[in-house]
Image 1 (spheres, rainbow, N blue to C red):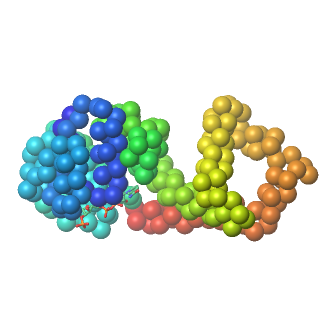
Image 2 (cartoon, rainbow, N blue to C red):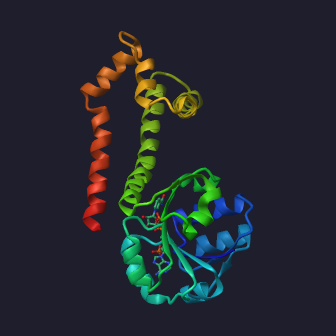
Image 3 (cartoon, protein in one colour):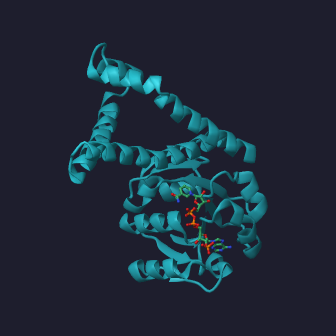
Length: 254
Ligand SMILES: NC(=O)c1ccc[n+]([C@@H]2O[C@H](COP(=O)([O-])OP(=O)(O)OC[C@H]3O[C@@H](n4cnc5c(N)ncnc54)[C@H](OP(=O)(O)O)[C@@H]3O)[C@@H](O)[C@H]2O)c1
């Protein structure tokens, strides 16, 4: 596949690194802006850096859009896609309807990924089913195909939450360190604990997560005591509130 990237930024660089790592038969053409990043990708993987955005579009089958939402209109004015060309957008909060209007293209799909794209382990939400986003990214991570676009916005909230986890892990690691643990051990305790939760929760399917919780935090255990403190301080509600706030912002935009 010949893939063109318009918006060579933090996320698309990680995606490109991950795609090459996945050893798929894929060749990447890059927009010239942010030249240093594009040149590094050219050096590492042989991506071609073109003189203009339109040159990228003209060279490829599929166009990946990775600019920030406020930069989208300017970008759309710079390019004309061919009717058979597919466009995949990773731009948060911009609907396929808006993409179709801006890029005068019918074949638009969306994907939402996390930083783990760089190592081929991201959560990959795509909309709609059967689109080029699904084709390209299905082998790339844990795929979640959304059949309603408002559900895709929920996946965007999930992508933000993915960023919040790192702050939580960091806080936990720092707490261990403040109590005298070496950084390496502290990091391992923080991260490994999360890894084993995820593995066990997957293993227990179809048991409801609620039932797994209850079976672990049984009354009068230290776990239950800590959970009471978390609830008392709004620790859990704070996450739901943050999700609601981001979801509201996304919906306001749409
Ligand atoms: N980063 C993430 O983990 C993440 C996760 C999920 C979704 N997203 C979505 O991904 C998109 C990109 O985010 P990011 O963090 O990767 O942003 P970023 O690092 O700022 O990347 C955007 C890139 O697009 C370039 N650009 C802007 N206008 C352009 C144009 N007209 N033609 C060609 N290139 C242009 C920018 O160049 P300049 O620097 O010169 O402006 C920059 O290199 C956003 O819409 C965001 O919602 C990001």
